[in-house]
Length: 278
Length: 276
Image: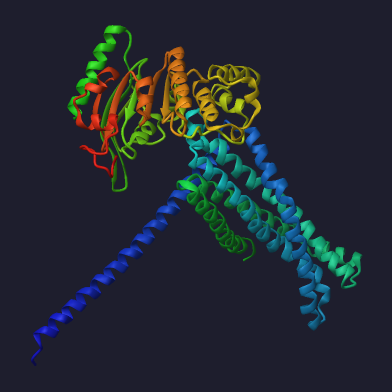
């Protein structure tokens, strides 16, 4: 069989080009994978250093106190409103659904379980990620860009101890407290709708809630809250600390802090649920 | 070039030894290199700063001046080479040794780098309160003294940095740099962004403060008026290496075409337009 030498050459050329494209693709994927593991490694190292500084002196009491107020006290309104309306809408939605099966009696249980196990920690976590994660990243990022972090080092103060440790400590401790308050407000929201809109008996509603709720339901939510508090403050500090130069760098750090914290919250929520209830 | 600079360094050492038998080199850089990815910023810097003298590093933007100073401060780790402060290695120091080294330093940052959440007096007293564990009341008294030393009244003490003009922020930065009576003070572009008169005021304050403290100073700048005012010795950094170093008196007769082009601010010369 005779093969035209020109078409054979063209074929080889196409093959070579195709091969190169495959190699380029492999290199791109390889680089992306390397970058991903590189950033996971850097984040893990940052987290380990941060935790180490939380447990070793000196501690900056004023900074820690300020963070407790910033992260905890000032987030109360946001978390309270979020859980209040979640509880209310949950009661309303459950009623319209459960009425079809004559199971309206289960509303109190559904509200209590959903709020304590899932809605209060996750929604509070996401709201705090937006409020606190962004502000931490913007503040530390601006300090990085304006050399304030270098200035701390030259004044013999470790930036991890002064900036990172207080935020992570406050976030991890204060989030469970916020979520516990959110649990109460959320259940109260369900109670309000059930009693005043759906004409439930107030005593029965409270009785059912108290009777059905197990300590593990609340505790699992609080453990989740502590983990989410750690994630939000860690991602805020990490992205701010490694912020690139200029306004754009700080903007990107803020976005990354909120997005990465939100995604990690959702992933860890699944993992922790599996640990607690499977 | 390396051989030349070390020769000058030796010259400085001898000169210094003659003036004071007990003096030694405060800062020594030996073949320091630093890269960021494929970009080689420092390619073997050799530099000696005698105790009690003021060394100014000149060079165009992006020649590695800031990286040099950050390596000496321990804010960056060089890829290779040695940096010695009083004969102790900075690049290997960690933990307590590093803390002890940091206590010898004071630094005036280019943009001031004042902590905007803290009042002026606390900014100045920061190193005293947290670094030297001084009582707050006593630290405030020292802070107000230092503010006076840089020409700022007591009223400024309770303002926040954002309420101050650029020149005042530089003065507060200077007061903070000298507050702990450091042995070595670093100045990063001390006159950038200031009007010529305020720049001269800052230059005079720098000279005065360094003299009063008997400190060793290491500055980076591209402002020639500032160089002539504050320098005892000058070193020129070009393409990541020290290409000339010597006493300020020799600056105009360096015989180095790069130095001549730089100090006279000529667009044409051996330094390409894209790098200058």
